[in-house]
Image (cartoon, rainbow over the protein chains, first blue to last red):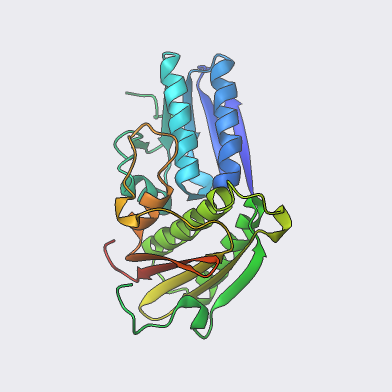
Length: 111
Length: 153
């Protein structure tokens, strides 16, 4: 099971926190949440993976989809607080180069 | 298979088994089985846990998503079986389903373009496992997953 915490901060950055497992079922919901944020004018998004206990290719697909739509709108999507287990999946797909993991949500857009 | 002397996952003592409808909703139950495996084998390392769980879920996702795509079978007859086990040196899983034959060459399962949103599942499982075997036996697909504990795969 999974829940998503979604907030838009005062500086306009959207923070999405998937709490639980990102698999084939929950990735669909993440994709919708990211699309809705971008469509609603939030073009800078941090996905806080600090409470994500599992990630598979569907979850990666949802993150890449969000990254592309954020960039098309002139923004970006960044990931933060990635656990070693989830990092393994990024490394195996070489996506750690496309989605570089940031140490914290607050500093994710510092550079 | 890399090692024919070893029994398949569905023949190991201490294995966990499930036979269930092949629906996306069943995934959480399989995650639960894997969680139980970790509880009973606390010495399994984090990296081995991560690559094994991810690979099992990728293959199951493939079964749920693709094995029945072109089939008109009534949904209630779509089933899969899974057996999971851990031994001193390996983590193994066998998945079986009564869906369509899988027409693919696993050696050709390559990562798609970096910005592709799908098509990574089998490539990811192949990269994470020490061996992934696929066989069509009768009217069933059989998948054998092998993760050697502590290997660099």
